Image (tube, rainbow, N blue to C red; front, side, top):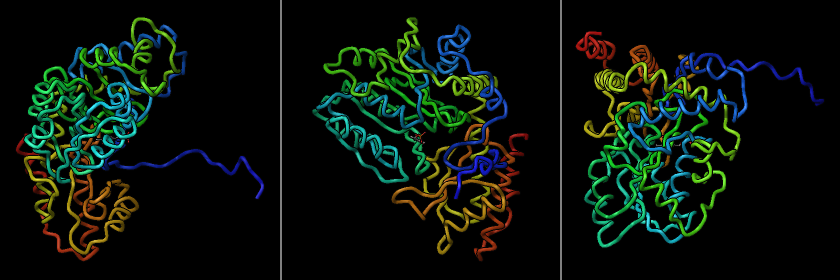
Length: 397
Ligand SMILES: *Cc1c(COP(=O)(O)O)cnc(C)c1O
């Protein structure tokens, strides 16, 4: 067939309700900010935008760390940035693994020639800090790494004990905050975290494409004291940091319009207030739980270890995973996630992230799921919407 340029139509995906593991729904203000004119990466106006973006990021991460910037790339680029800057061949690195993203961290450590000390835990449960204490006993690892919000399972990993273990063993404490940042407390400085990375498309509700990171003074010192150059040129924070810092030295062209979008998303978060935002995530999570419980559905994660922004529902016996998710998307415009790895076909992952953590989405999802499951012949108990409404009502909504 001959190539016909008129064959390609305007992009028009239509509306969706993004209730998966990310991307989450993007507020119109963010999309609008992204459509502002593209200017030069050394333009004085853009340099001011960079400074403001850093200020807003420090506010969200609750840190004074000088190196607090968005890496040009998605959350995985942030993950790679942390490890490639802090790990040299032969360095001992402890990685806690209880899901897909801990597994990905391990893969990166191996590729960098680090000496991986893996602490495996059950998928769907938090890692027991005692297991980590055992693993570091008699060693002096360079880094202790953990995922705060394991998006593949919906587990929240408490950080206090692991932070102490890192400190006692002299390790840098490295935390994946891709899904937690913007949806729950992360407090980098208070928690003694040395390196953290996140992503824009989860609870920050900006399109994917940037990865906010932050390095403590201790991490910067480790970077300066490296014996070998950082093996990635693009992600070398000693060079990228010079562009974001006072020198303004060109390294690579900043993704200008993505940074406009992130700045706007962070401005929205600051306007709402962190405490209010985290409380909103918890409230909508509780309403969703009340509804699902009433329907008779089970969750993967025990109540005390659940994340507010990512809810893993056990797929009822005999129900067709893909068919239900397809019906949610085609009949109701709702996107949710399936299970990953060993949980494929066993769970649904329902996100209430950032802009999407709203009563409207909770009610829509509960009624859609109930309708579809009934059509599939599942005996669903009624009253889910009432149960959710009761949770909101008790909060005076
Ligand atoms: C999404 C996610 C990542 C990877 O981010 P990408 O933007 O997909 O590269 C890493 N860690 C966690 C916990 C995530 O949820």
